Image 1: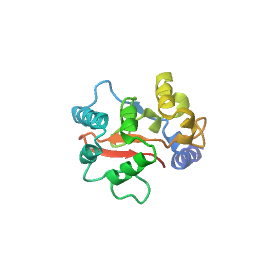
Image 2: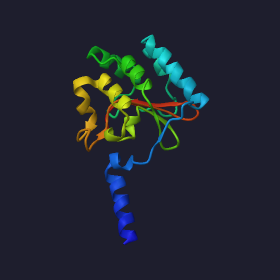
Image 3: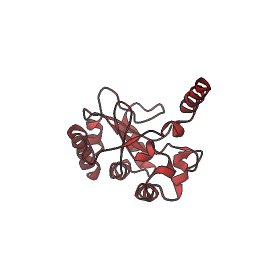
Image 4: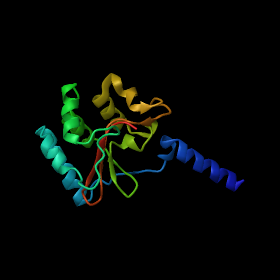
Length: 169
């Protein structure tokens, strides 16, 4: 019976990311210095809407900014701007939210990236509603009640490397 239960738990964890996110740790009140420094630099560049500076802050080893064919974050961000998506504004909003400690460990914003909607605090839900407005449900695969978050998220590694700023799944 224990083996069957363990196999079922493993199957659920592999096939349902939102359910696998049951174990999480919220970010500490004081982030590690390298993470805090990178977050501050990202916010400063985003507040100036300096996309070139933002690109320069990205990890040169691995930086996920698209799940598509895009090869340069700067080109993608400028294209998004042409269509009304202000990545600087989104980055500021996301980095102003609570974060969680993910695998590695890495520091991931917003907490919704690893925490189900129902387990988010009222303030976390309110911040996401402020960012997405009426389009909030478009940012959860299968909806907020049972799905998982696929909206914008940011990852900073413990060494201060900015490893992702991406939306999608």
